[in-house]
Length: 127
Ligand code: SF4
Image (tube, rainbow, N blue to C red; front, side, top):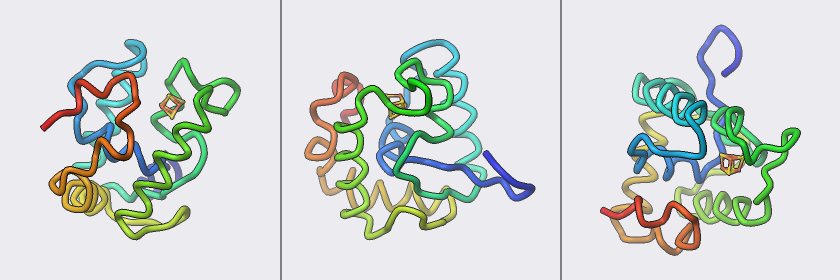
C-alpha cells in the first residue's frame, strides 16, 4: 500500500484470488496479508493494476527478490484478466469496482477456468 490515500498495487489476476479466498494460502503470513488486503478492497481502497509483484505478493514465499517464481504463468493470467475486464496495466479504479468487474466479466460468465485453470488452487475456486 502507498501514499496517504490508500492505494493497493495489485496484479489483475489477484482479483480472482481475492474473490474466492477461503483463508488458505502459501503460508500463515500470506493468509494474514491476503485477509487484510481483501478487507481493504471491500472498504473501497483504490487499486492500481500492476504487471509485477504487488501488495499480495509482498508476503508470498514464491516472491524471490521481487520476482514471482512462476512469473511466466501468472503474467498470462494477468493479461487474460485485463483483456476480459477491459483495463490496462497502470489503470486505477475503486476496489469494489474492480471486484465487481471481475465477477461480472469473468466469474459469472464461467470464464474463470480459462484464465487460471492450471493453478494449484484451482479446486478451491469453484462457484
Ligand atoms: S505465487 Fe507469484 S503472483 Fe502469486 S502471490 Fe506469490 S509471488 Fe505473487
